[in-house]
Image (cartoon, rainbow, N blue to C red; front, side):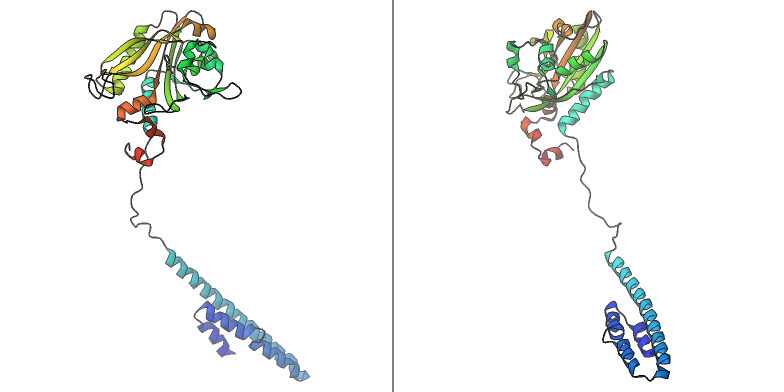
Length: 330
Ligand code: PHE
């Protein structure tokens, strides 16, 4: 008996202990054989023998359980040790992310106007005819609708072709004075070096009591804005046409690549067009029910700004999702 217990205590692995378990407690093991002997024991000694056997069984069992726990614990510790991580080990540096150049440019533009107390508004990208065209003085058969190639849905809804519908929504849901910008994605059926079907604009609108804002205010603010964005450039306002502004202007800066001498980027003109603007047309105010107000509006393409500021030759590369592009702007 003692030698059996000794065997248990001295077993050095769970495997050898398992062997001992079969030897002792198994169907053909030591204890089973002892119990078989019981039937040959004559009556008077039977009880004593049986009690002795049960005691043996119990003490073997508890020796076994004890050793099993010890070996199991040892195994767990060994495993933990072998799987331990040295968190102080050098793991190589993690790559830093970066803002997409379009978003970074957008943020800079927004920051400029927020500092001038403009509120940042937004509107839906799926628009209706009223907000995108009609209320902006572009009635159904107005030829100026040809300026914008529009994505239409079957039910007449459309993808907004500019951020100007946010002007309409803001004027309809609030009262003057208004001082807002609307940054966001817009959509046109266009695809070449300088056009993608989705791009971003920042729209601006200021509405005050009649006579309180003038083209001079618009001009001085946009001039300062362009100097902030592009540094020491010449700025010129060129008469132009938009249905929703009158008078209207397009704004050019002297070419930042050739400093006005003429190069490929500016098509030898020395100037780069960067903005559209003007005094809000009275028909627009009529459409939203405003009276006795004056206002100005402007709109710009964020990708165009980003291209010029970062000298990106092909606009389409901005939206191909190539991580190497982002890595250049980290
Ligand atoms: N909505 C015009 C465009 O997309 C830009 C613009 C906005 C012009 C506001 C004038 C005033 O081209």
